[in-house]
Image (cartoon, rainbow, N blue to C red):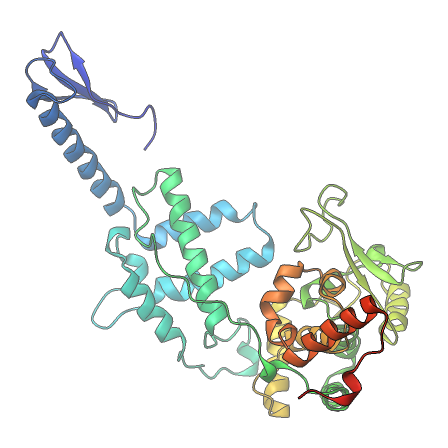
Length: 396
């Protein structure tokens, strides 16, 4: 709705209650000025409410789900990060094209016909969506894959953002998915780890490196050594490498140069990714080879993209028979091993570019270890008392 907010007013010239709405004047009820509780005023309010509801229905009916989603994507194309845009587009497309049993595509339906149940049915469908066969020469687009809890949650958040924007922009009168429950976010469990101890992790990593092509190996080694997000490493350039620190430094928004990578916490702080061997040596070689542009590249010299990560690790999963392996398995393993080794939450959060709250949320199963907590308590108490710790005798 545009222009001044409509209201009910008494006009002496018309001897009744009037309102100006959508550029037109409406006589709501003739009679005396008896507001705020008189019968004439109350009837005028009732007619005014009917007028607003009729306009709400009209505005909502004129927009289809696809039209709203397309206009929202166009709006965020220059405002959101490319990764966010890609995620939204990739989830909205199957939703708009989804055809419930005995009905038209959701995208062609009017917005007002959209219900929570319709969305839940779509999410259930995406849990079992088949993967169509495609020939190697036709691999221009990523395969549709089954959705897990994280995909469900991201979709509900994204679709609500689209309709809330449409309400604020005046395209529709209300968000039909208002109040929809968001699926709970799922933390990665032990199944996503490369192994349960240092020996297993080293063996699995060696197998991954053996079956990976040479141009992938420095990138995969960097995932293991840094625990960084795949997208951060893929964006790293020679200009981001600081030899004196032995680290990549991505600056926060206030210091970031135009066109440089905008990391996840760029609004508040720099992102520093410390490098150790052998990744540090690999990066020095790549800096000399590629003084401009991304350091980690595909065989054809082009930069790695998100689709490349996903497809590469899908192939590794099938070849190594590790159904839960993803690029983020390295990050999850890194965090798990650091916590097991006794690293404090604040330090780990800084190394991984997260907040301590995020670390506690996703790794609470490690932080809440009863024996570990008791040992910390005993060490604190004995240190404070200046006595020897009794832990060597065991716990009864």
